[in-house]
Image 1: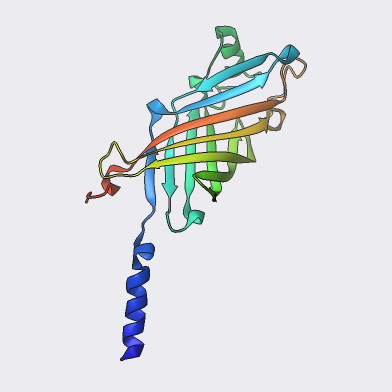
Image 2: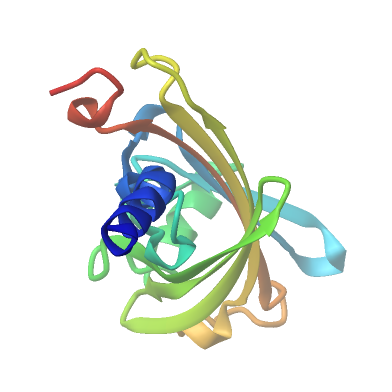
Length: 197
């Protein structure tokens, strides 16, 4: 009899962890921004931003190796400090938006570091090049029972070499290092909200 009861007690104790399902979020396009910054001639700082971001975030409270992030960024959304720089960045000198309309990031591993900090490993595709990148991120999960409360905010940064993505033109005028700042807002998939079907 004890051989039957003991496994049942163990299952009852651990079942909340086992039954915790991954949480799926859709990126809130209107509230998500990607910022780029670099130094130009004479260490003059320059910036640009991208919008129109779409994608999904999956967080598994029990198993962080199941966490995933996939983001698509339309290059046509890029705007810089002036119209000439915006044109140049979208042109074949840099992003070549006509031939390569999307920048894509897909995570390969999300590692929790504690206190809302994460290290995100993934693949960044710019133009016809895909390279591994590492993002340092902070995550704020606003859990709750209403749609407004079931949101998360993620902020992440990384630095890439533009030459590594075949954007090495004007090397004398523009620094090779580009810092990327990501501010993602996402909402939990409606059908998965607490109390949902």
